[in-house]
Amino acid sequence: MAVAASVAAPATGSATATALPAVNMAAVVKAAQIDPRRPDTALTPGAAASVLQVEKALDAKGFLDPSYVDGHFGTRTVDAYAAFQRSLGFSGLDASGLPGRSSLTSLGTNRFTVTAVISPGSKIAFRGVTVNTRTKAMLVAAEGLLGRTLTLTQGSYNPGGDSTSAGTHDGGGVLDISVTGLTTATRTDVVRRLRQVGFAAWLRTPSQGDWPYHIHAVAISDTDQSPQAQHQAGDYYLGQNGLANRGPDDGPQVTKVTWEEYQA
Image 1 (cartoon, helix red, strand yellow):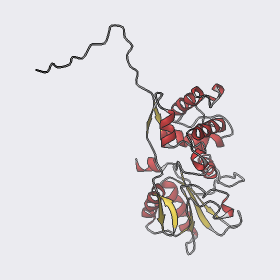
Image 2 (spheres, helix red, strand yellow; image 1 turned 120 degrees about the vertical axis):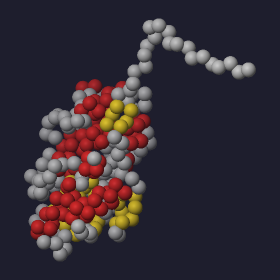
Image 3 (cartoon, one colour; image 1 turned 90 degrees about the horizontal axis):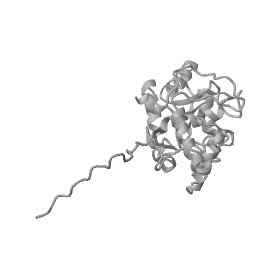
């Protein structure tokens, strides 16, 4: 007859296992876009505790000087995270310093768990351009609010496709939208609806650069973003226009949210 195995009681005074801290990926990614664009070392609300855990792990692995372990995901932390990504074998846009699920999970091994995971999804062809599934879902949601379908003139993952784009379309989450045939009021409403679902969006005009009138939109917290698109998302949060001059935001004001916050 088989004898049931008994479970030994823990010895008196033995250490109790401590749960690992949780790192909110959505909050960390938001801070990684905003903090490097700040003129100071202010903290992104709701992100500091998670950023601090990431920085502690980067410090422990020798990628970040302990003086920068402060909850602010500034340029030094971006550089350190990019170096960590390269140490995992990532390169190019996958080693831009913007945390992705795979690298953040690896960094957290035996140190923290990852919650509020976000993903850009897979690359797909959509209305003649390339986007990812997260960006498509965001655009469709904005169109639902508008009650109209928009025409795309440039998509994502388009390195070198348009020299005037300054690299913003090299990665994921970025769209250019035609405004042909739209009234001034409708153009503004398009920008507003895009912003409401989680895009940093602006109406671009010929007076701003060598381009025709169009709407430029960056999906906030898309982890496939190029560094240039990351900067535009951060500037949007800081009330700027996403251009090289970093002028004041000239678009309709809405509550700034990510796609995941909009869905919630």
